[in-house]
Length: 99
Image 1 (tube, helix red, strand yellow):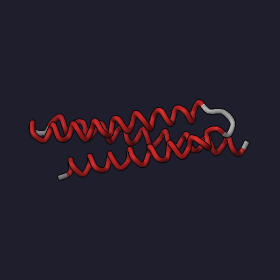
Image 2 (cartoon, one colour):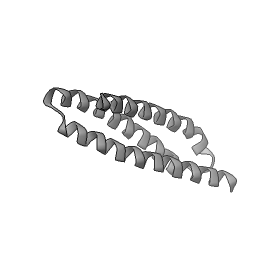
Image 3 (cartoon, one colour):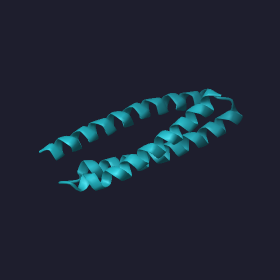
């Protein structure tokens, strides 16, 4: 039972993080839409990288959600890694927008 509670807590945390990041991504997307043409291309490339990493993290998260028993524990490291890569890509994109 404790393992199930741990999985549920992990899923809730990951879901909340992904929801927050999606909202922040949409904010950057709006800034890109308002940017001048030359800057817009640079921003779009950054956003594409974030979106690609976000899709990867979502796949890993869904695998955890669909796992049974202790299988989710083995998938957790892949999700944690995908999340770190997504966060790094987002922070890089955000810093480009803040310049």
